[in-house]
Length: 128
Image 1 (tube, rainbow, N blue to C red):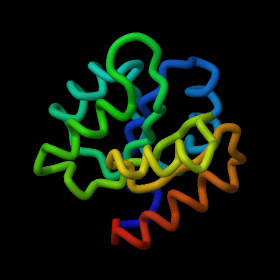
Image 2 (cartoon, one colour):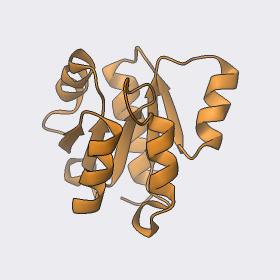
Image 3 (spheres, one colour):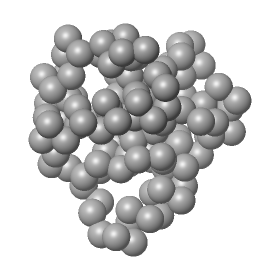
C-alpha cells in the first residue's frame, strides 16, 4: 500500500497540534481524529487504522500510555504501528513510552519532513 492509501488516527487533545499535523499530512494520507483517550478507544473499535499517532499527555482522562496498553490487548491492534507524539524528551521518558507499547517515537516539535519520513519508513517496514 502506498502512503496515500494509509488511514491514520491522530489522538491529540490540543487543537493547534491537530492543525499542524493536518497541514503536514493533508492530501498524503486519510486522517481521523480523537480528542481524548476514550474517543480513541471508541474509534479504534469502529474503524481500522494503519498507523496511530498518539499524544502521550492527553489532559483529563486516559493518557496516551493507557490507550496504547489497551489497544495492544486487542487482536487487531497488537502489531499496528503506534507512534508516540510527545514533548517528553528525556531518554528515560522515551524508553518508558516504548516499553509501554508504542512502536515509534517522535518528539514535539517536529518538522514536516521528520513526520513524513517516519510515516514513509513505517509504511515500508510494516508493508502497508
